[in-house]
Image (cartoon, rainbow, N blue to C red; front, side):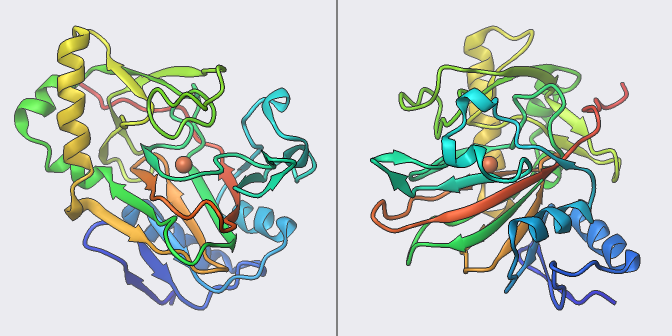
Length: 283
Ligand SMILES: [Fe+2]
């Protein structure tokens, strides 16, 4: 009853005919949720939403969370948005960005993996986009886990990993990031509570080390795992159009941002959904 098409072999589905400014019938929401937990990313094109409507739309798929960055680390303009909305933009006033994550490329990451109780999903809605670049690339980490070489599976099975993030960092060691650095320990491989499937739960931007391995071995294992996760066959690369709303699952996917011109405006609103405690596979 919901018309859709797959966007790549493993990752992403475009759903047609859904106007997110309207409350959708439960059967439609259930169908979208089914596609969502399986394909990790849902695309809704041609949306026209106010902040209130984006928050309401987010609420159709779960419990809306507030933007997680502490107030004292938010810009003044950010503080004037609805509490659920994160402003992602390179717009500047007096030379200072009015929102977060203003410029350029960002390494692959799970949103919120640095939190003890990460938000399960993110919705990103595009208001203004540059003429080129700024694509968001997603990888399906169920598929990446299933295809992980056996020796790497053995290295991470049953292990925990430390995840940390300096707010605003676009890559590890980004000197422009804030010093505030929340961190959280999670299973290296998690269970998705809705599908029961295993997914790799580590990423290049935020995962620091696998606990119980020497740093040198951990670095080598992580490098191989990240290279594996970021292979083309697991990816969907989204070229944004104005009015796109993209919802992704932070339990089963990672995403990265590609570079875009610094002299063109990019403006997005982000919301998130609260998540359940992270589950480790049963031994
Ligand atoms: Fe992100």
